Image (cartoon, rainbow, N blue to C red):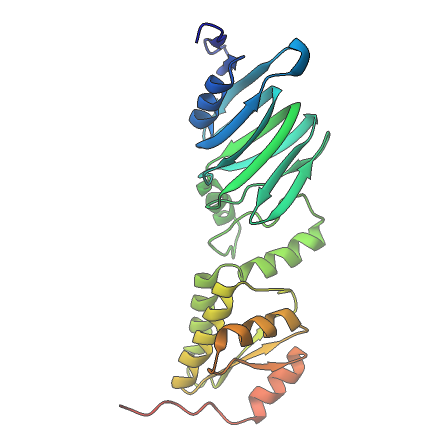
Length: 277
């Protein structure tokens, strides 16, 4: 690669190390080493313009701050991230695609565009960004210092929200963790004398196939023990998904409000436990 310009600077007193190149292939390798493998395509600027891929990386404990400058056209599909990456754009725009949904960030915007464990793609043309890269375990450690904290924890959305919106997203996000919900409901149902468990779904606008199957199976498992699972809230999409994945099996009981669900749970008959084989 006779045309390649590649420089790795010595770390300065602040611990900052610089990776810099004008070669698209080398830029792909830098990206792989710093973040994740990416099937990347980079195009040099037209009309002989300047090309540059630069990352100035500063490690502070288990948090890393990267200042990136990309003066190339970049697009590609990447493997899932294992670290949490928060971006702040200074110049230019970048489009991220995850699961068929696109998110665009422009100058001055901050966000968490890439959920862990999912493939993603990106495209950008020139710009400067700051990236905060951190170990996901730090979230659990930070949350554990708060009395009554619930684990596991995670970032709730790909953009900053108000306190009220964050609170609603937090409640909704619980339902995105099927293992957490199953364990929490199972614990509540295990209490002596429990005939029904009412699940307030008001802040659960939707569920995916995995969560829907979990709720249907959980309702069936509780019914075998003589306990009803009752859902409450205006949850049209949730009910449709539960019915879609249930086939000929029964779905959880449903009422429009929590008060209606509680009244039905108190006055209605207990679920008929399964007989011994």
